[in-house]
Length: 243
Image 1 (cartoon, rainbow, N blue to C red):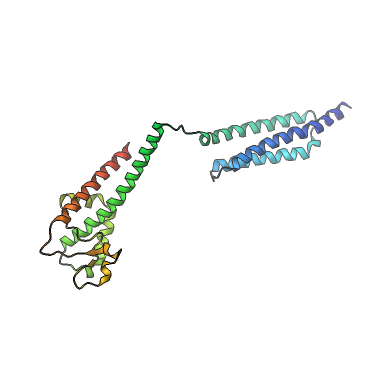
Image 2: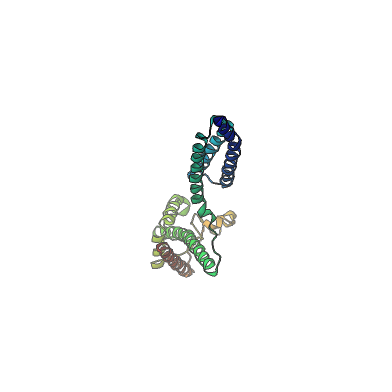
């Protein structure tokens, strides 16, 4: 009689307890599933919660298999697993729940970080542009007798390597700058009899004005000044990366 009484009590109180545990697990799953991430830790945590919830649901449907002796042991085991998973969840969510303090110091710190990132990006872009310019214009000065129209491949070759190795041509542009005759890469000559398309927007970046008797060294001075600025940015970038 007592065995049947205990068995009846487990069948009565067991399902509500297990359903409460299942609801708690479901709440944790809902919280985790809202996180838009493919993180392996998160995926494993959701899988473990899901497996435990399935086990609890199985126990609810099979509550008749438990008695006053086995059910407390099973319940204790489930509680221990829930507690362990909750600890893992708390540890995983802690960095996501930290609210960053907003202050003058934090704003200045974030601003300084953005400035450093932007300076690095600007330095790289300007360095590659002026490395390309100096390298290709040096090629003109060194081999001025070679016609641009017949040697575009060489100018493109110098442009690519000038951009990739930009600190070297930029420093050379300070020491001995060539005359700056094309906005970017000299590929087309602009003469009195040149076709109109060489002056079109976009194409004129690659238009080269050949030297004349009235040339002034302004192009060299401007190019040297720009190379000095880019070199300063390179130095700032090296400093920012070291701190």
